[in-house]
Amino acid sequence: MILADKIINERKKNGWSQEELAEKLSVSRQSVSKWEGAQAVPDLQKILKMAEIFNVSTDYLLKDEMESETQINNVVPVEEATSEPPRRKVSMEEAVEFLKTEKKYSGWIANAVSLCILSPIALLLLGAFSESGRIALTEDMAGGLGVVILLIIVAAAVSIFIISGSKTERFEYLEKEAIETEYGVIGMVNEKKKAYEGKYNLLLVIGVVLCILSVVPLMGAAMLDAADELVICTVGILLAIVSIASNLFVRSGMIMGSYQKLLQEKEYTVEQKKAGKVIDKVAAIYWMIVVAGYLGWSFATMRWEFTWIVWPVAGVLFAAVVTIIKVVMKVEE
Image: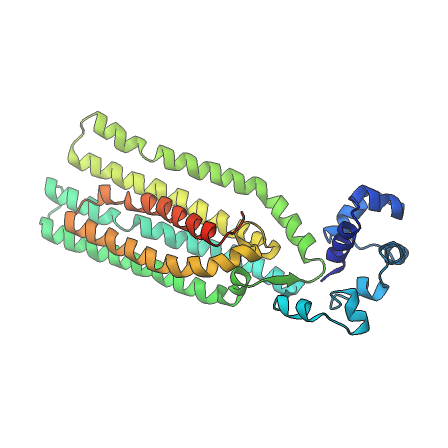
């Protein structure tokens, strides 16, 4: 436990607010807030004063490895020692490296998601143009070529996922294990998160607006009773716009998620991580079924311009499944 956490614990144990502690130490409330946020370190005189008013030793306040005053006398209650497994420590260097890695590969993964969404466009256009006679290919030849292009694009996306996964695999414990950060990490991450929040919200708004506008060309073509060939083209435009929106969602979400993982906020609290182990197992089965259903339905009907609806529906249903799991496990948001 770092100094910042110990100040918070001892202040709350005594039932004091930040203002009351600040008054006892003859400092401003902002100073106490910075100490507790690991954004600043109190000087030696203030640490001595805190040790006095908290009735603890300075060793306890200054030594991160000393979790409680009972350890000063080498006495650790059995219940305390065994109630919770030791948390993995994250150093400042490791935290910085993790944030850089997530930021770099968020772009890779976002692009791979976009490729998956774009993959059926060639199949749709080739089928439409061959049917109208605009290209010198039979419908079977156009369909076969379209499927080949689709598979090549999907293979490229999968390769990107695998490469990105191999580069970020060493940080997977941040999603699944309870952690304890080195002194100063929380303050650093909070500053970066605060600086990114404005951009994150803007990217989310842009993504949502793009998703809403993506159906406009298709609706316009339907209202004008346009030829089938033009309707297929508008479906391609729809997929292209959705791919851009998804790219923004994935890219910004991964970067914001990297801050939340280190801060253990939102879905990365200790309780959420416990539920996450169950959710991961359910998700693996769920999404395999969704992918198989999507491809089976699409190839059976060749209605790619319609079957894409599987993904938003599956996403909504999966959110419901996750909520049910959390309710059963009594996980608070």
